[in-house]
Image (cartoon, rainbow, N blue to C red; front, side):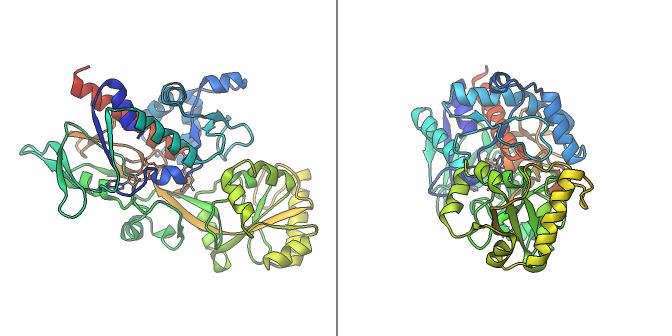
Length: 437
Ligand SMILES: Cc1cc2nc3c(=O)[nH]c(=O)nc-3n(C[C@H](O)[C@H](O)[C@H](O)COP(=O)(O)OP(=O)(O)OC[C@H]3O[C@@H](n4cnc5c(N)ncnc54)[C@H](O)[C@@H]3O)c2cc1C
């Protein structure tokens, strides 16, 4: 949708083909948090940020395993992306200052007031509907790309059964990665293969397959965004704000097993290593109040998933975890908070863990994949020898991300930055090239 809006703004006619009956994909399941550096919303809040600082945060997390120039480009574009989304496209985005994600040295997440991708998608759908240059076809899976004798992409085959041929001057692959393709997950990301798949079912890796068939290079196929805290069995994401504001994760034995503020993506694998692959978010009232601002957490509040207790013993009983150990764990944690020396090296503690306490049974999940097709600074697909695949662009989960080679390289926001960021760049470039602008 972002690519379509950007292309239409330049004057191009766009056909947006969506496999399922509803636009939105993974984006609608996200928290809608878009990172951007140097926006006017940050300035208004007195926050000094820059694309360089943003890129440094990304590099620190991915161990410099992303393309430096492309990462910096996306960071430099992020301010324009967010301000364009607000000013031109009409999306309601606000700077999130209630909490910072692990690895973010500045408040730079811009999100709908509900902190949901559903609001973001609803606003995008509305904007797309208002543009008569964009034709949307739902329930219209793209089945393959059409090339001419030179191998240049000249169209797509789309629709049910045999499909229909649609001629196009440029094709933008915005169909995410392969999170919903268990065979590909087992092949490329085997460590997360047993986790819950908390993701959109449409993302079966089709675009990656077509790009590869045309000779485009694949990069960092082992990269993915995991999440260490999805309620079990309800399968509702528990915002990591709970951990960053003072919560801890324990196992059934009542023991912590790491520094909760380091990373939620690779930490998913630590959760999978616990007995039954389960863990328990334990947090106090302050964390509860912060999390309750998000509508996903409000949905959790309507289920029986969140246990509240006046004593540690009562909480342990309602979650069926070892009470004595939990008592000791919380005592040790509060001591480390006041005097330092946490066993797991945690230094960022937030509020103290005191009653009333809350707890949620959680497990690990795969959110989306971050490996994909290599692109250049215009989001055009590249072959391994550096040649451009003519007329073909990719963004979001179809293109290689900026999260390095495994789960630990994912910095919060890398998902929507590469989806919306490349979307805008690809849409504008495709339109300008077609129209000779
Ligand atoms: C719970 C959760 C929370 C998250 N929160 C955040 C966050 O706050 N910030 C952030 O940056 N990232 C977040 N992410 C990651 C983010 O959601 C993704 O990185 C991003 O949405 C990917 O966007 P996309 O455009 O690549 O794909 P999608 O939004 O998934 O869109 C792809 C679309 O392509 C369609 N499609 C697939 N194959 C075909 C085909 N053959 N023909 C036609 N259509 C097809 C799919 O049906 C789908 O609608 C979160 C992820 C999850 C699961």
